[in-house]
Length: 256
Image (cartoon, rainbow, N blue to C red; front, side, top):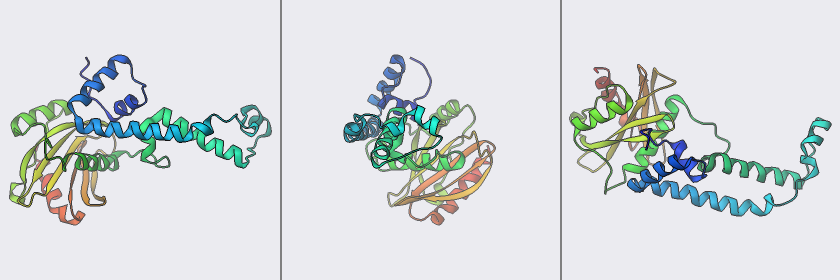
């Protein structure tokens, strides 16, 4: 078994049966010990099967002559008919399913996020998965042990924000996989039971970026980067309600 972390790419390659046997066994073992992630991967598999079933009759149709590669090159233009257009859409969808698996359901027209935008999405995903988990929302609750663990996995010192003066208690945290490598997730709650998620990881782009708000249907957050380390805080309510917390986290992180 390798020590390479399980990434989003690994999860989707697992769904597509595109992993080497050894790596597939590692992902399967990871899913057995992370039922929340396993449920998400299962939904990818279900969506993949539904799309394949829906498109199979179209994919089995003979290739229209208008889509013959030699004819396209020879005529220098594309001649489409209702049948060829229908087949082309099906072909593109089938290729998307085979090549990127579950990513297809995220939006075929959306380009991959990068920099702080990707970090904001990763923090939002972690919030949606773990903040609602009342059985095991965090993996480690000891702050000293957690800080040492995530610093080792991220290969640089990581400080756990202290939000007690802002009315939030530290609950614990875990290391979560992202498309850009491992990230540290910290969780907090207040006397009302509202939970916050703070996500941090090294940045390959946007290594220094100003604080920017982002929001979802019932949550919001702020993301930024300083000195190659990105941070994102996500919680319920409006983004502006989280700005003082984001400022406090940023202030504490700069003292590392």
